[in-house]
Every structure is written in structure tokens, then in C-alpha cells.
Image 1 (cartoon, rainbow, N blue to C red):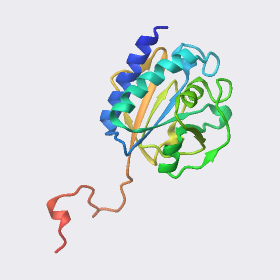
Image 2 (image 1 turned 45 degrees about the vertical axis):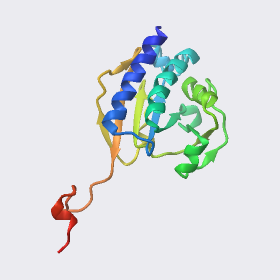
Image 3 (image 1 turned 90 degrees about the vertical axis):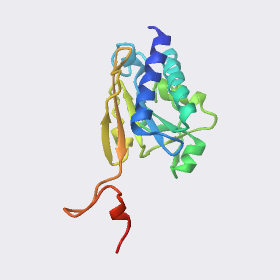
Image 4 (image 1 turned 120 degrees about the vertical axis):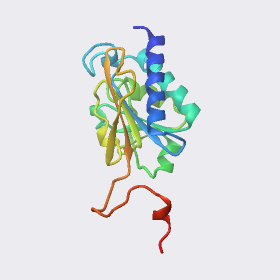
Length: 189
């Protein structure tokens, strides 16, 4: 497996998602990832720290440029809890849980992120502004209520299928509701 190619593919996909979702320092991006699927193996059966490192480097390059926060979803053995930086937990009012992800319980990607973060913590739930799912790991439970699919130019990393989504505020109201600001909606006479 060409780790340089994986890193480039990840960087391209994360760049597309960042642009399409408008991610800035005010936003949180959730990543679900099966390194086994990237290698063309069954999810949870062939995890790889080397693949996790390449994926992390690709994500981190875009994240550092644009400042959005990151959350890495653990596997089902940790109930899909998430690895975040402590300041992310505090900023979003998240509740810490006690566990350390390892490749066999948490997954290679979450374990690698935990080892790389300056002050890693694990939380049970988030409501991210956007997400990338590498290998069909099902990140939807960690997105805000109204998710909108994003179609990055690349749809695979290695052998893994990739999907992505951004979120938007709910549209509320009835037939007379207005959803965009215009000069006529900003003045009440």
C-alpha cells in the first residue's frame, strides 16, 4: 500500500469537504475510519498504525491551515466514542469518559489520534458540523440533526469507500416562513 498516495488522497478529500462545508476555527469535523477497509480487508480485521499515520497526516495538514476542531470516532467496541483534544471538549461542553483507545478496542485510527493529540480525551457524543466516513463506519450519529451529503471528487481512499456530509440549521415554519435574509426582511415597518 502506497502510504504517500493515501496521505494525498486524504488531503484532497478533506480539502474538498472543508471548502464545501465552509469549515473554520468555529467548526468541528468528525472522522470515522477503518484502516482495514483502506487496505481492502474486512472492517476491524486488519488495522494498521502505518495507514492511520498517513491518514492523520493528510487530515492534520488541512486542519492546521483552517483551524477546525477534530473528533476521531472509535469502533463499536467503545460504542463509537470519540477522541478529541481537551480544549475541544471544553469549548463544546462535552463530557469526558474514561477509556484509552487501542487498536483492538477503539481502532487503529482512534488509537493513533489519541497518541498524537497534545491533550487527548474521549467523549461519548458530539454534534459535529461535518464528517468524513472512510470505510463505511457510520458517523451519522455524531452529526448535527440536518445532514447534507457532500460529494468530494475522490470517493475512495485505498480500497475504502468514502462518504462525507455537512450540516445546516433546521428550516422551521410554514408557508409564510422566509429562509434567507434580504433588505426587505431586515426592516420591520
